[in-house]
Image (cartoon, rainbow, N blue to C red; front, side, top):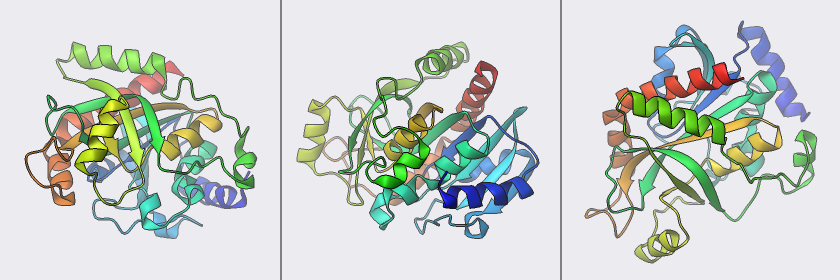
Length: 274
C-alpha cells in the first residue's frame, strides 16, 4: 500500500469507531448530507495526513462517519480536481483511503451539465458508463501498481446490479431517475458550443470535471462503483443562458431533499447487497 494511504488510514482508525462498507463522495454543493448523519464523527481534511484540500466553493473538505437512515457510511464531503493543479494520484487519494479503511462500495456523486435538451436543471441521473476525456489516467506511472493491476477491466465500471436495484427503488417511490453516460473533461472552463455538439455525438448525456479518475481507482481496488449526477445546468448551446458556478450551487441546494433521499437509498441497497 502507498505510504500516504497507510498513514491516513491509521490516523482515521484512531478517530472513527465504525467500519462502514459504503463510502460516498459528495460533489459541488452536495456536502449538506454530512450534517444528517446520526452519531456523526467529522474530521477536517486539513487534519488527515497527506489529504489535499480543495479551495473550490461548495467543497467543504470534511470526512464524516455515522449512520444514514440506519446504514453506516463514510462521507467524503468535497473533493479536489485536476483543474486545481492536483495530480491524478492526489485526486483519487480520498477514494483509495476510503476503500483501504473499510468501504467495499463507492458512491461517486457530482454536479453535471445536461447535454440532452429535454432534460431540466434539477434532474437526477444514475451514471451507466463514462467517457474519460481528461487526457490522463490515474493508472499511469509506478504508483498505481501499489493498488493492483495496471490493466483494469472497465467493462462494468458502474455496478449493473446496484443500478438495476436503484432504478427499481426510485420507481417504487415515484422518483424520476434518469440514466446516462457521464463524460469527464479537464476544465475548469465550461464547454464551447462545438464541444457540446461533439460530446453529444459521442453519446454523452452529462458533462463534468470529476468522477472518472475516482471510478478507475475504485475499480482497480476491487470496489463496486455507483455514480449519481445532479443535472445542475444545461450545457452551452443547450442552455438559453450563460453558465456559472453559482447556478451549479443554487440548483444543488434546490434538489438537496430528493438527492439526499436517493443517496440514502443507494447506501442502503449497497450495504444490504454486500
